Each structure stands twice: as structure tokens, then as C-alpha cells.
Length: 266
Length: 259
Image 1 (cartoon, rainbow over the protein chains, first blue to last red):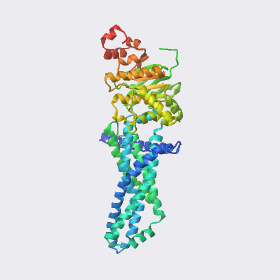
Image 2 (image 1 turned 45 degrees about the vertical axis):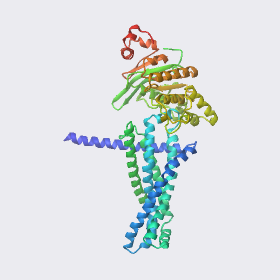
Image 3 (image 1 turned 180 degrees about the vertical axis):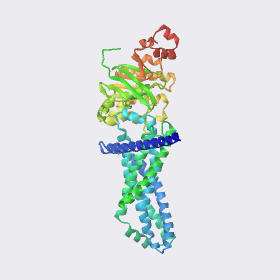
Image 4 (image 1 turned 90 degrees about the vertical axis):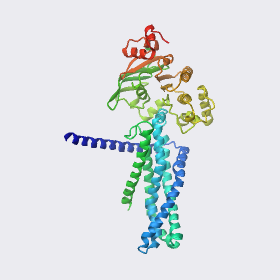
């Protein structure tokens, strides 16, 4: 009985230590990444490559998701609002939910799945094949060389992708609301125009910025410290497990932070 | 041991554990400038761990690793960068960056660490690749090369800044006899030409003895002996005796002669 209790404590202690360690490691990782980003020299070519990878290459999937999200919001919103006879508020409902909430969150989740996982796996493999050690031995700071361009690229790309998501979502909602469901075109846009204000855009921007930092912070640090991770270790399987856990953790963190930011800014 | 030089690297009483496993127990080793020191020992004896301490990639639990008299574990980032400027490393897995071409790989240290113009960089890279008997591979990616070629590209990259100290971690592991000899020949030629200090971790005893000025055996967490190859083979240290017997057989022990 005593032994079982002790084992419980042992497990709890082990768990707590591991997660304290992990959080500290990620915090320090972010700190080093930010310092490396701020310190000169600045190189534009790697940044452009990363914007191409994280931003441009995610565009198609963002447009696709955005369009369908807008369309389904049109259907669902119309169904709910028509019960109260307020179909004319459909435009503002779609606009607000996209700009404040769904645009940034779904964009961040898609970027995590597409680019975050790739970043984690790439850096994890570089760690396992001694490429990161090689960088250090060549006196090249891996944070400056590997992480900084990704961080800046994500901070630039994610808000722009979210903006694309919003625009396509609003058009998708329009496509369902006006030609299919017969909502008045003027009412759709006028309602949106009146209800979506700068504060809503600001909240969306803040969220996109924070999510971009979360994606790189979690995915890149998980890959970078793959050898220290409980799920990791060396070899291909370690990298695959760490990539999975990075995507899960970063998605959960995005949703939790989404709640926190909303609660603070509202 | 040669006393006329100050050691360029001095390992003093280094201890290192991973979890409960004690890998190094008060290891001591001196590396002399311009010489090739080969570190041998069984798998898992701590050879690579020792090497990583010299590179500053691992920090000792206790003891010191002195590079030109300064403790590498206590250096500030800037100092460490300075020290590493003089180092070239060939990793066990070559550690070439697989997303960029061979040319870009060898050019990387020049691009990141010097202010040379592109045409000067091209000249140096081509010269180093030629030194390694590599022709027409500049635009290939590391994954398109054979293991031996990757090692040679790794060696070219390690030498591209004309380092004062070169570390080779298992330079011939995974290569056939012919390729191994090629790497040894290239190493020998470049060391003659460039005069760097070399630290080689290798499994490949006794062949590697031909290249060595000193041979050091790691066993039981310590450097058991660090001697010129001829003396090493006749050492009375029981670990060294065992090692010589296992790798070279009775005949060499009996006659006590070098290769």
C-alpha cells in the first residue's frame, strides 16, 4: 500500500519535473531565438525562402479551407438566424466570427499541420545527423542560421494568411448567402461593414502574431531538442514521435491562447 | 612523450556521466600541435564523448578541457566562436547539410564567417574539392553521393577555412578497405601540406597507427596510455595489451614491432 502511494508520488514528481524542464527549455529556446533574430547581420535570402515555404506554399490550403469555412458559416448562420427572422445579420455574423476567431485560429492550425510539422521534422533530423553540432563547430549560431528566419517568416506570413482566409471566407459566405439562400446583397455587406470595426481586426492580428510565435516556438524547439525529449531519442522513429507531439502541443496551445487572448481583449 | 611543445589541448581530470552511467572517470590527455593523435577504444568506451568535450559540445561534470590554456566549458559565447574558428570537424555521419548542394556545403563556412567575394569563394571551394579528388560533384546533393564521397566532402568542408586543429570522428566507419585507404591518403597528404593538429577517433586499429604520431586508448573511462604507435604496441598496460591482442593478434605482441 505504502509502496503504491510512493509510486504515485514518484510518477507525479517525474511528470512535474519533465514538464517544468520542457517549459523552461522552450522558454530559453524562444529567448535565444528572439536574441538571434534581433542581432545583426540580417540575411534576406533565407528569410525569403522561409516566407515562400511557410507563407506562399500554405496559401492554397488556406484559400481552400477559408472558402469552405465561409460557406458553412453561411449555411449554419442562415439556419440559426432565420429562426429569429434576422437573416439580414448574416453578413455581420460571418464577418465577425471570421475576423475575430476562425480566421486566425484555423489559419494557425493549418500552418501548424503543414509547415510546423515539416519544421519540427527537418530540425529533428538535422539534430540526429549531427548537422546542428556541425553548425556549432563551424562557429555558426544555429539560432541565427536556422531558427531566426523561420520565426520572422512565420510572424510575417501567418497574419497575411489569416487575412486571405478572412477575405475568401467572407466571399464563400456571400456565395451561399446571396445567390443560394437569397439574402439581400446590400444587407450582407452593409451589416458586415457596420459591425466589423478596427478592434476586431486588431484582435485578429494579435492572435495571428501570437500563434505564429507559438508554432515556431513549439515545433522548432521540439525538433531542436529531439535528443532530450521523452518521446524523442535518436533515429527516425524518435523524430516522427516528436513531430506528432509538437503538432498536438502546438494545436492545443493555439486553442488555449485563443481563449486567453479573447478573454483579455474583450 | 614529446616535451618540446606545449600541448594545444589539455584534458584534465574530466568526468562525465549520462544518467547513472559514468562514461569518463578522470580522463587526462594532452594533444600536441602539428601532431596526429589517434584515440582508439572499444564501442561505447567514451571516445566520441571525449571528442565532443574538446569541441565544447558537451560540458564536463568536473575537470577541465583547456584549449591553448583556456577552459572551453567556461568560455563566453564570443570566445568559443573565436576558438571554433580555428577548428575543423569531420563528423561520423559527415553531417553535410542535405538541403543544399555540395558546393554550398563547402562554401557555407566561407560565406558565414568571412567577407570574401563570391568569385574568391568559388576558387577556394573548387581548390578544396580538387584536393579531395572530387570533380564534377559541385551541383549534386549529399544524398546523391556515396558514403566515401560524402566523407571527402565533409573533409573538404572541415578544411575550407584552413583550421589549426582538425577533428575526425570515425573517418572510415562504413567504408570499404579501398575507400578507407583513400581517406587516409587524403588525410595524410593534407596534413603534410597544411600542417594542422589532428585528433582522430577511430575503430580502425591497427591501420590507423600508420597515420598516428600518438595513439591514446580509452578504456574504463580513462586514457590508459598515450604513446607513439611503436611504444603503444609494446606497452605493458593490461588494457593496451588486451586491445592490441584483440585488434592485431598474438603475432604483433610477440614480436613487438610496428606495422
